[in-house]
Length: 142
Image (cartoon, rainbow, N blue to C red; front, side):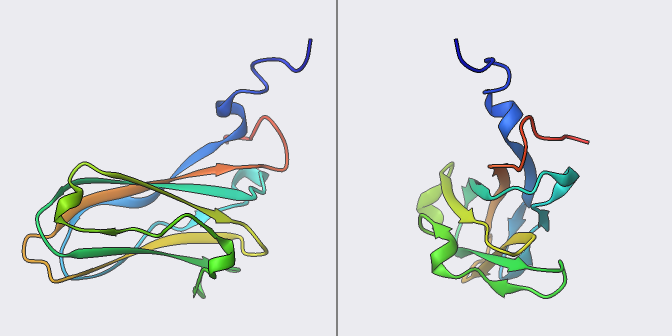
């Protein structure tokens, strides 16, 4: 009758990681948490980022992605590896959720970068990374 429902569950195929700590951000740049695509030997090949905005008082909060081969030297993710639009969060986006993806190439690490400008009070938001398409199922968790 097909594969076991346990084996086919999202829990067994995905792993969630912090990508950008929830914080109130004002003018400046904040590098997100380094996400290791090889964590626990899983060798993930796709990432879905979910950015959640809380209260955005003012300013423009641009979210970009960077990738790295070594976790030290970072470069912008090319458009060919992005799925969906990278968001710029503004005051009209209170309580909004934004989703976009990363298609893994040869880089082992990825992170988000939040750049805020024109803010007095700023805005509160954060993000998680949902890692998927691992080299084996179920994914290893520790």
